[in-house]
Image (cartoon, rainbow, N blue to C red; front, side, top):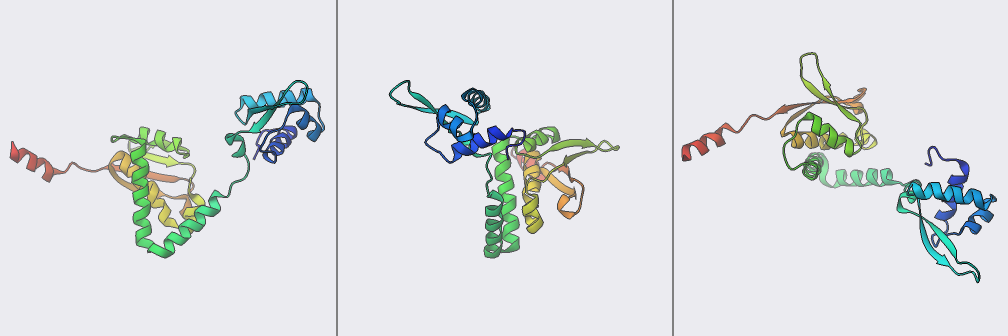
Length: 217
């Protein structure tokens, strides 16, 4: 949280978190015991980064005071327990539907995720681009034989997959659906690998379908 920020900016954002109606420069200067000039400088930087926004003005009997609010992006800097909720949900789902159905569910989710990323079959380089947009740190690795592998240096579901390895099926289905092929999970971080390594093999064309089409001509 607040990586790279100074203490004053952290305290300023925390103050706005506790005051959802907003705070003025004078309020913040008094609350943080710093000068109004310093508050202005910090507000300018935080507003530029999209962490705060300007709210209403408040009448004072003199010049109206501008109020500053924490933005939705700023709120996301504070801890969230998404991981806890995900653990609970996967655990409950696994108990209710069982292992085999959980595998099918993860594969279905992977295919749906792929459908939202690309409307046509793509190669490994494009697959990696889509994965990186989804939070993976992936790249295409070329073996000495010329074969391509997709190497992910992080596992976006690592904690979940440690407790429920079925979650890895989502990755396999995602890559397989994007590239329309079979996927080998050659190395896996959950199984003590250094990276997650995948090899995509394109499915052969449906020869029976091709023959049936030719027979109609």
